Amino acid sequence: METDGLGLRERKKRATRLALSAATIQLSVERGWSNVSVEDIAAAADVSVRTFRNYFASKGEAVAFRQLERMRQVAEALRARPAKEPLWTAISAAVAERFPLGHDMSAESAGQRERHWVAGVRRMLAEPAVRAAILEVNTRAQHELAVAVAERTGTDAEHDLYPKLVAAAVGTATAVAIEHGQAANPPLPVLPLLAEALNQLATGLPEPAPRRNS
Image (cartoon, rainbow, N blue to C red; front, side, top):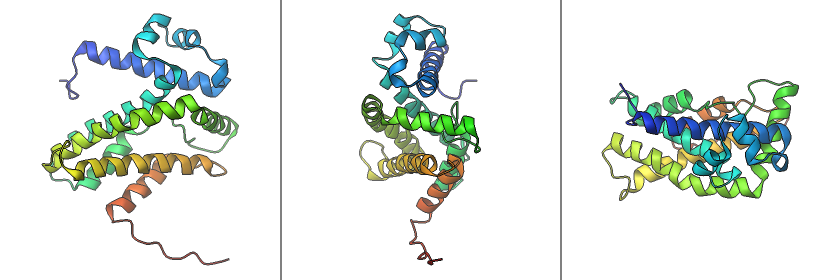
C-alpha cells in the first residue's frame, strides 16, 4: 500500500530527482562547486545530461531539492503519526524519523572525513546560486508542511495563520540547527540540536537563565 499518495511513475521521478540532488551535493562537496559539471552529475547518477535538464534548470536547483524533499518527507511522517498525539510531539518525531535524508551534512562524529565534509558543505551553501535556489524552494517546502499541519489541526493552510506559522517555525529551526552545528568546532550533530530547538518552540521559547561568567 502506498502511503504517500504517489503512483509508480511519480515515485520513480521523485527517486531520480533525489539521486541527482544527492550526486550534485556529493560531488560539489568533494571537488568544489566550480569543478563539477552537469555532465559529471549525470554520470554519477547514471542518467543522461538530458535527464538532468528535464528535472533541474541548474546545479543550485538540484541542491535545493534536498530541502524540499526533506520537508515533504517530514510532512508524510507527520500524517502517519497517531491522531491523538500532541502536535509538537508528532512534529518532533516526524523530523527525527525523516530528517537524515541521505548524507548527514552535520557530521555525526569528529574526524578528518567529517571535518572535510562539513567544510565542503559550508563552501557549497555559500555559493550565490545555491543560496538563491534554497530561498526559492523554502516557500514551497514550508507549504508542504503547512498542509500537513492544517490537516492535523483542522485548519486551512491557505487562509489560516496557524499552520503557516508552525511550518515557518520548523523551517527556521532546521536552518538554525544546521548552521549552529556546522559553525561549532568540532561540528555538532544536527539531530540533537534540532530536537532541542523544537522542544523550545513547543514550550513557547522560555527565556533562558543568564550565563554565569567563569
